[in-house]
Amino acid sequence: MNYYSTNRKAPIATLEKAVVKGLAEDKGLYMPERIKALPQEFFDNIENLSFQEIAYTVADAFFGEDVDAESLKKIVYDTLAFDCPCVKVTDNIYSLELFHGPTLAFKDVGARFMARLLQYFLKKEGKKQVNVLVATSGDTGSAVANGFLGVDGIHVYVLYPKGKVSPIQECQFTTLGQNITAIEVDGVFDDCQALVKNAFMDAELNEHMALTSANSINVARFLPQSFYYFYAYAQMKKIGMADELVVCVPSGNFGNICSALFGKKMGLPIKRFIAANNANDIFYKYLQTGKYEPKPSVQTIANAMDVGDPSNFARIYDLYGKDHAAICADISGATYTDEQIAETICEVKAGTGYTCDPHGACGYRALQEGLKAGEVGVFLETAHPAKFKDTVDRILNDDIEIPAKLQAFMQGKKQSVPMTKDFERFKEFLLAVPNP
Ligand SMILES: *Cc1c(COP(=O)(O)O)cnc(C)c1O
Image 1: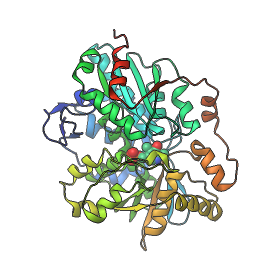
Image 2: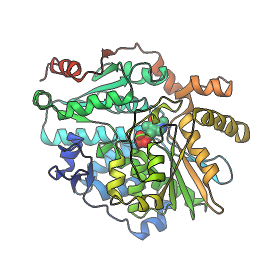
Image 3: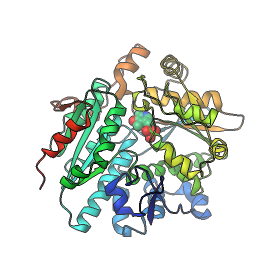
Image 4: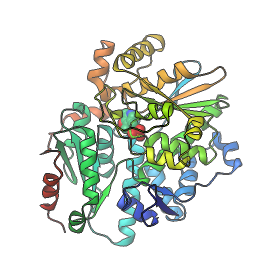
């Protein structure tokens, strides 16, 4: 299958090129040329299939032309070595828990898939070193670093904003060593993202080293996220709750919800979607006004959604033929202040016993406020609450337990390279890296 750029000024790319390059030459995002509808029998029988079986069917529709069946199956099955259960929170609200992977956040799915697919292409082509650049506001860095840790022929540079990532998140990518280098940027997330984007556009740098991105702009990261929407539907169908399903996605860069929208185009019977934002409400405003007006991000307690210019907006816009009314027909929005997020975490805990993380809390609240009679809601619990322990403890006046998996990271020694937000400095640093 070929991939085109959302800006339509770059050459058509193969899957391999789209995965290795990440961003198209015209700074657009790659989109698959076709989105295959899955057969009705698949949906009729979906509740009897395992997560891996469902995911393989979806993966085959996207990647089956480019990756042989056996390899693709192995990539999918290895990626999904953990469950994504739908857990009941209230009578009509369920939590799709996406935090049972190695770094306890949904980004594990895309990152693990991408690492394996990239390795497949490198082996096939007999290529040498590839360098992955990734900007993170927290969870991307840990998921990508752990997804790629120890993978031969790939070096990962994680750029993160100094002082704006929780200590628990930070240790998940600064303590790994091996083929992972953490870079602490004196700036905000958008500065990190700008450094990465500039690096991809810099001819001299690209001459010196093979660069690729593992941000949610990469097709190998964002498309696999559609797997768990199909699986959520299957779980809800199994308990007879899937007839009027509303899925609410706490959104920052909009990669996660975008993969859900691809699922819908493939025939996944989800009635409608809600994109829940924190105070960074650019998409919410777009829905209200039809105008997309990026602005600098503001810091919130749901920091993985502190994005002022969501990259994947370009994909959603393209997917819906730039039609505002069509977008509004499938997606509504919500935006919450830190106070509202905190209030929701308390209310859910007191009312149901369930502990939401600050991102999931936005999702829960949007359903609680927005569900209509007869509808059932699933919100994505995008990370384990313990990843935001300081915040959640303070709000709940509690001392929530840190899962052993997370505890293990906190034992390591932090190593990172300090960096300014000046691109020339970053370029010098990369040019000084010896390249095989
Ligand atoms: C990355 C992240 C989000 C936002 O996902 P996008 O795909 O960027 O919209 C939400 N919650 C958590 C915990 C995250 O790590």
